[in-house]
Length: 361
Ligand SMILES: O=C(O)CCC(=O)C(=O)O
Ligand SMILES: [Fe+2]
Image (cartoon, rainbow, N blue to C red):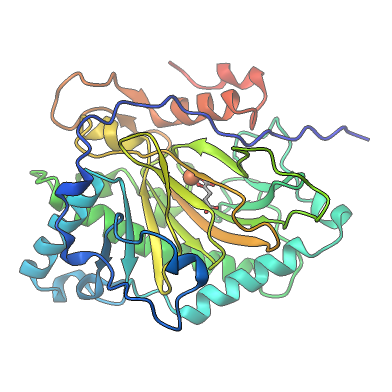
C-alpha cells in the first residue's frame, strides 16, 4: 500500500509591490446597483460591494460571434476591463452568456463526487510524482478538490458518475470561450498592436493537446464542526496569487473570498448573484510590465456552519510559452511557463522536489 502524501495547498507567492494601484480612480458607473433587496443575502447586505467593478459584457457574451459585435461597444468594454485589471486586478462579470442550468449541473456533479465514500474518492488521487496537476486532492477538512484537464494529454481518471465526464468536458469548453473573450478585451485594452497576441499563446484552451495545463477545479470547503475552534487569522485557502493568465471563479452564495487592497488589508469579494469573478494571475504583470495586476486573495472561514463550493477555471498560457514583457523592456526576465508553474507546484508541495529538474532553464 502506498502512503498518500497530501499537499499542503497553502499557496504562498511573494507579495509584490502594488504602488500603481489606484482603486479609487475607477470609473464607478459600472459598479453594481446594490441597494439592498430581498434577494440579497445577509452577507451582501453587510459588505462593501462597490470596490470591485461589475462589468456587463452582454455586448460580447459567449453566444455572439465576434464579427457581429459593434466595435465601439467592444472598445468600451476593453477600456473598462483595462481600468479594473490595472487597479484592483479583479472584476465581477455579468451577462457572460454561460447558461445558469449548465452551472448548476456542474455544481451538482461536484456535490455528487465529493459525497462519495472516501475510499472511492481516493482512487482519483494524483500522486506527487505526476506533474500534470490533475485529479483528486483530499486536503483534510480545509477543502477538497477535483482538477480536470480534458483531451487525453494526461492520464485523467474520470469518476463513473453518470454524465460527469461529458458535462465537465463541455463546461471546460464553455469556460474556454469566456476566457478567450476576456483575453481579447485585455489585448484591446492594453492597446497591443496585435490585439490577438495574448490569444495566440492560449491555443491549449481549444486544442487540449501537449500544451495543456488549463485546469477546471471543482472545490468544496466542508463546514466546521461545532467543536472546532477557529484560530484568529485562520484561512481555508491561504493568501496567494494564481499562476497562469486569468482565472474564472464561480462561487456559491456562502462568501469567504477576500481580496487584498493596496493598503494591505483584506476585503470581502462578496458573491453577487449572476456574476462570476475574473482574477488576473501571475503571467499578466510579467507580460505587461506591471500595467496589469495579479492581486493576492484568500478564502476565510466566514461560513462556519455551511459548506462552501466553488468552480475555478485556471486559464494558463500554453506550457511552452516564453513569457516576457510585451513592451520589449526588461521589467521581468523571460520565463518558460512550464518552468514557472513547476517551480510553484514544487514550492507549495503539490509536486515532489525531484521535479525541479524536469524542465529546461
Ligand atoms: O474557492 C475560491 O473561491 C477561491 C480559491 C482560489 O483562489 C484558488 O483555488 O486559487
Ligand atoms: Fe486563487
